[in-house]
Image 1 (tube, rainbow, N blue to C red):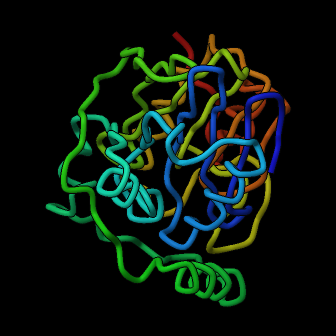
Image 2 (cartoon, rainbow, N blue to C red):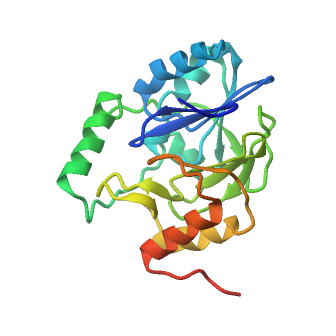
Amino acid sequence: MRLDEGLHRIGNDIVAAYLVVTEDGVTVVDAGLAGHWRELTAELAGLGRSLRDVRGVVLTHGDTDHLGFAERLRREHDVPIYVHHADAARARGEVTSRPVWSGARIGPMARFLWYAAGKGGLRTDHPREVVEFDDGDVLELPGAPRVLGLPGHSPGSVAVQVPAVDALFVGDALTTRHVLTGRSGPQAAPFTDDPTQALHSLDRLAEVRAKWVLPGHGAPWSGGVQEAVRQVRESAGRPPRTA
């Protein structure tokens, strides 16, 4: 689905991944679920591109519903997978998180699980090899993605800013659709390792400007980065921190 010039989404509001398309090739941000492979190839074909144009996959963190087709791209097409060093072991499946399902509503939770299962989410092909990056790195990939560390959801959770498409990809640093409750709008994401740290990390976004705020779950947000952060804090019952 085209969001803007050079910016596309595959998946839906339950689980999403993104494509940054430039003359130099394609950068994939997050890899959704394994079953999104067909949508990936179809979206590329609609753009007159192919898997040969993909230069790299950038993971916002190492959770399984963001790994999807990443290893298949690496194994079959020699596409490198980039992840923050603090989440490298998590992405490789060497460590796992223990999700907390408190507050879940049966309907939204069932839709999330049904969709994930139908897209191959019950079996994750963890990357065998990853390229590790650090906070502040600018990756040598189409669009020159810049890494902003946002630990909390996971130790190596990041946002990825791509000024070339006026977008900030936030992974699960925040969500615009809570997969366990169905609530819409910017808010804290579920399954977060350290919710307090995750809220504090949003301070990093105070000076970031981007038309698009793009989460791994939920509708694309075009109401401004700061407004998205404000609503996350409001939903969490916490005012912005002051110096």
